[in-house]
Image (cartoon, rainbow, N blue to C red):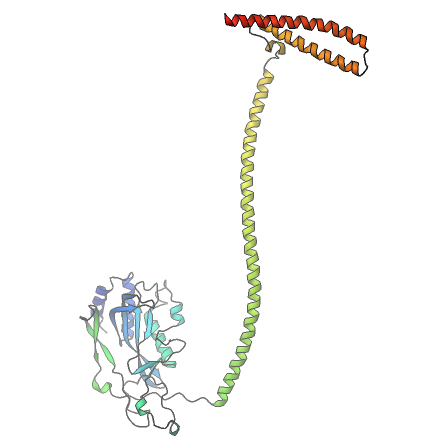
Length: 399
């Protein structure tokens, strides 16, 4: 299959993609393996209502279901950060089809699969769109994701007179003989298969480059048979399944209760551990602050201790000083005044202690009077001399 035109077209439209080479390689590989798909640029609307221009592979994926071939319409969108994000895949039923929800397809047609959930963004060989489409073929061959809309006009008037014919039907197979699943014999509408043209053209409606598609020749678009209906399950199988479901539900409920109790205990233990961790962290922080403060205090104390040691050494090295030489007046009068005041204070102390000795009867009254008379005379002489020196200093200041 010649993809030269596709390659040239992809170089023009992939400007917004970060890994253009990877996107181009994956698209080309997918188109080689599945020629029923075609690329286009279109607007993709997210779940929150935002729109974005993205590359899309649209068309059909052939599957084999009950020895017949069917073509499932799909659309594979490439996010702008592909391959960091996996492709977004949808089943796109036509107006004659309905989506059959399953574990891989929801009611909107979006496809879910572990291959997408565990998409490997680093290994190009492990996660590719080619493998994704191949996986779609496998899961759709087991359980087709679409079925043909039932034609209500062909239902019998009396529902009890004939079995129901509104069972899900898969897309009609390609190139199969014409049959009908409805008792009336009327052929049901079929989907016209399409193929890719080689040259891209400009779509005037939306301004994006896309591939035009032409219908398959008329003989391939004729009416095709529906796949056989799935067999009805016996009542015994249904009852056994219900019993198993009830037993499993009971065991699951018991398991959930047991797990809930253990989970609560683990959560409480985890909460206690978290609180203990927080308490330990706070205490550790407080102790570190105390340690820093103690280190600061020790440094200050060491510095002051050194200063004291230096002062003591300096004092010890100095010569002894006579205390009497430290207290002296500026002049001789001042020095004499110091001596007289000291003598007067000493006399006062002697008189005081003599009075105490008399009161305690350690001396008699005669002895007390004799000593007091002697020292009182000396006190008077000193007070007179003190007054004279003070008067002299006051008069000298006024001069």
